Image (cartoon, rainbow, N blue to C red):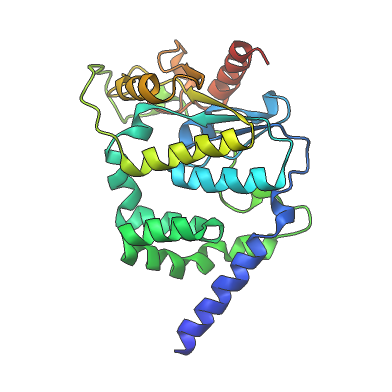
Length: 281
């Protein structure tokens, strides 16, 4: 009983500290948020795009992207644009298995529990209550170092929920895939959870009059399936009024990739300049 009570107290205290509004009030004048999974986390260099911040995070589903956007918009009225990672892999049914798998759900709950509203708690706990509970237990351990290092200068990039990651690897030193392409269009079955929270992101942006732009980052020719059939179909049917910049097949040198699906630091610089030019910024 004492252990359980102590855990509850620590979770409440840590959540209170990490929900300090000052953390989410961006210190620089920011009007553009770059957000998504590891593709944007590694692929866009926010220092090259004026008044932007990259808060993307590896393996984030749209649920976790949504709760970050919601918090940032709440405390920063100057946000006028959002670049959101969007590709077939974000939409396919396999994302439900990924999102609710024991280890993944536990880790993401530990990482994001303090940002969740009641709707997200019910949604995740209802899908895998055991993994969700384990995530809450892990939450204090995961965030202890973060809490210890918080200061008046700390912001959203300092709390372990996303930032730009610079990779130094080069693909020709990477042995993950042979050069085999499989770009045939396959049947697209949508992820229910991704569909729900992508639409929540869209509705949130509309409510706050934020322009949402969808971006697919370049993929190397060794990527097993570069076809964006699922994303194209979904965009045509549901998102025709939202701009989508698909750079999946952008021709980049091997030396600009860290692996088959992520740009390295040099690749991010090249791609950021290319995207900025295409958007007219």
